[in-house]
Every structure is written in structure tokens, then in C-alpha cells.
Length: 289
Image (tube, rainbow, N blue to C red; front, side, top):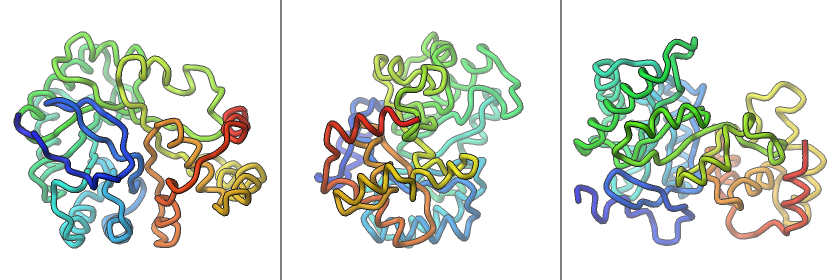
């Protein structure tokens, strides 16, 4: 197999199993997010994260910061097989545009392959596309991945019916569906969680972004950092509110991608694995609305 023994993350690094192009892989339970960061900020945040033990960075063609991320990866001097890179291409691309955009991602990152490549949205951002377009883009992504350019492939923002379109033609596992998930959504209906339980039933890793509610409207964008519930639980564990909000997600086996450009916060966001929330605390956080 092309990638036998590859992706040798540190043995003790927290991971969940994921289905790769050539068989099982390990998906890091946390990584640094880079949405809305320009090249300069993305480079500094990624380098800081990797210097503090992170081994996963999440970027995208649409973020326009892959050059900065690539510079950070080069500067970090971690052997390539010991870290994990996720990128994404826009939805709604035809086969030739898919292949061209995928190759552009590798060029910008300065890498020969990514560990995970996602289709960012089930259509164009303005909503143009449909089942046939989703199938065409997925098949082009598969062909590209099979050349050794991605170890695993998946989707983002996909609902059950979008995934089923892809499943009807897929010859490679859909590794991941990356969606918004945070405290406040624990008891939300399927539509709000992008069909979390169904995704898991299909062997698709359900991965969270915006787990601190960063894009949420004020005052909710601070609720999972300084809000009463997470702060109170944090005091019991000598952890910050943000660490509690993130822990609720990873303790469910759901990988997170917290975003910060502050080295102290970057360190805290990865420091989630020396404690566990009690069943009662998990329940409180799950029932929070």
C-alpha cells in the first residue's frame, strides 16, 4: 500500500480512527484552525501551535492562507510523516476545475500530499450545484487522491442526502464530515447537527469546527469562553471555560479545530487530555441550550 506505516503521529498523541484511501488511519483529536487568518497570521499561529506540540493544521483553498501555513510547516521542521494537514476545495467544481484546484492546494502548501482533503460545501457558496455535480466533484477528488496526493478524503457542511449522493458513486471511504458543533448543540435536532448520529452510523468521522462558537452572534460568541456554566465547571478542574467547552466535544470522540493566534490560548486549547469531565458535567453541557 502506498501509505503503509505513514502518518506516524507520536504514539501517545490523542487520535480517533478514520478510514483512509488505503485503509485505517489515525485522525488527531485536535488541531489548529486558520479560518479568516491571512498568510501572515496563519503562519505565526501554525508555527506557534507546532512548537507547542500540535501535529494537525486545518486550512482551505478558500482561506487564501495556504502559503503561510506551508511556510510554518517548513519552519517547524517536524518530519512530514509525523504531522497531519487538512485542506479543502470549494464545492460546485466540475472535474477539471476540481483537479486544478487540488493541485493548486499542494503548490501553495509546498507539500507532495495532504493527509485529508475535503470538499468544503455541497454546492458553490451561492448554492449552485446538485446531486450530479456532487458526484462529479467527488469522483475527480477520488482519482486525485489515488495518485498519492491525499491519504483520506471527505466533506464539510454536508447533510445526509448530500452524503448519500456521494455514497452512490464512491469507491473510497468518505473519511470525515466537518461541521459546526459546540456546547448548546448537544440536544439539537439532526438538521442542526448535520445528522451527527447518521454520519457516525456510516463510519464517517464527525469533526467539529467553531467549537467555541467564534462566529456566533454576540453575546453568545463569548458564552463558551467566559460564560457561567463553563467557568463554573472549569474551576472544579483548574481549567478555563474554553477548555471545558472543547473537552465536552473531544470527550465524545469528536475532533476539534480551535482557532487562536495567541500562543497562550493555543497552548490551552490543546491541553485537554489530563482530565475528564464527570458524567453529570457532560450531561449539563449536553443539555445546555
